Image (tube, one colour):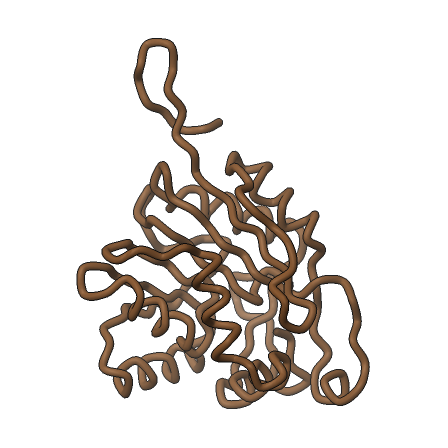
Length: 225
């Protein structure tokens, strides 16, 4: 989300980085029309999380979704959040501590994820891609594919192209990314689109993609090109 309050370009990224963590939480509540809990439930349902999975939340913000994801994957699963804003991460760590859940939060860029190849089962990317210019969005897609294990999946959720008016627009002017662009970002880096469409809250849209493994004629397993 692009707030009308403190927004900065951070060294090392061409995207926007938000630094007012409290205002971020309020704005998300406003944009979800007070249905943030319902939004989290829908997002995690779309992601199809399973107990024991290793999850990465890219652009995790203040950690609310990461906390909900940790409760779904349970004690045998792990959740890691990465964000370019130290202020967001500080609030996320406090939230996780208050919730009594163990989550690793790291400072890092979506365009250069600080994780090894094939490390996660699921990557979540919610209301973040619209912060990045076109080239960085595609680099983010390539990085997500890199850190996904074969058979893993990514769920992206972001604002569509409609520009709503009224009280929401008064407090917040957010960017957007078309559903077709979200789909192309992941398709172009070799992921297979499983499902896409409207989330059903505000003008949010989603794309779910999978890192499908293929079986060659010699019965060896490999990565999609």
